[in-house]
Image (tube, rainbow, N blue to C red; front, side):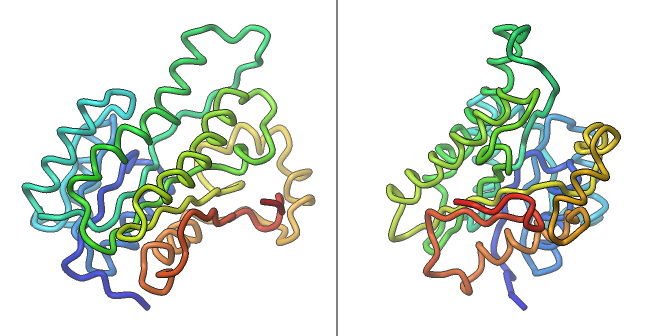
Length: 246
């Protein structure tokens, strides 16, 4: 459907299930892929799975909570592939914790990874963005409706949505910025929740199933494509109708 040949994707948190699907979709569409993750061995192994030659896909360690890591990784992307066409921020941390006994450190860690990490990567990418570049920040249904036992995560993701809208205003008209908010997507992150509330949540979902990582990835690819050339500052919900709202 889309041809991204010769263009470059910078993807954070790239060793997660949704992120791996994003990387594979973009790679199959011809994109060069600079993939980062806190798990250096894991991301290098995944990059090698995508491209054993190492010419179109490389994996680097990046701690999303450290601004210098974003600066270094984007500099490598520029040196290796030239201008960056697509930035997708997918690094995240999702842990159960009630507010009443949440520590300062637990709050800060979630905000640092889920919100500040998006800011660090987007800021570092700006000098290297090509004309008609597109940024997509992975948010969450939790950022719209809240989430029991995940207030720190939901607060960060809600801020990511507002940050994305603000960045869209600042980078227009040369660069577009959008967000994708997944709901319940197949993968390790939702397994604890499904064990407790799985049948109930599936029943509440109009499409009566979980989403797949590939369905999120295709939404991201659409937003990066020229088919979405007049879309910026928006959020695409990928949740099967479990949450319908702005």
